[in-house]
Image 1: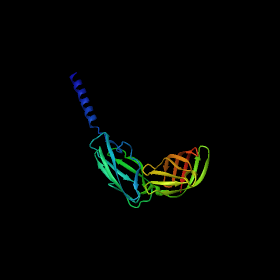
Image 2: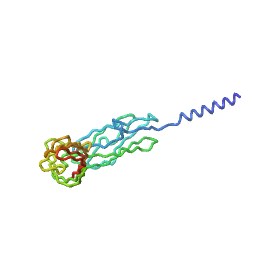
Image 3: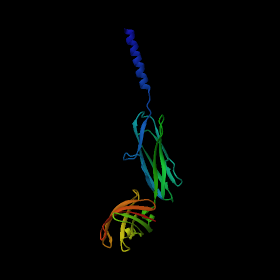
Image 4: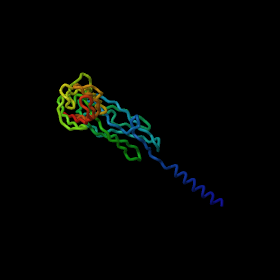
Length: 236
């Protein structure tokens, strides 16, 4: 009986020893400071942008290092440092640099690697914006308007205001050359904002929308001498 008990104890000890020797590779995530996956980064066409990523320990071996690298960078955009290695949890702090970079959207990838695990890949965009986003639209614009009771095309003109990322649009909505609407652009959200305002000819307009490098799509309401809700596409 004693021999059986000793044998069972020996088998149990070996099993426990084997279990303890199984090593689990590190599991981690790469996040922004707000806990999101890496997001699009907006860059000036000439200048610098500082970014921090959070390489977060989840489970597994706390002594396994994680390497993070930015790949697929276009010519004209540099990152310092492009690669970082450390024990999670740690911050990967780096800076993008540009000089006369063409305005546009450039896809890149962040790749995380650690021993014994598959690489983690996060795809996002570097969006190069001008110093003044309103400059994308200054001059003649072609409008295509879809309203609650009618659809039509018209021409408008965008002019500078002297304030960065703002402009006025003459004849917005085709409401007449005596009308001028003040517009604010948010370059890092690709958004358009039109606060409630009397644009002339007895028309009050308010709305919001989005923009790309050569097009704005604005949903607005007009009241006063005109009553309608429209989605207006303006391009140059």
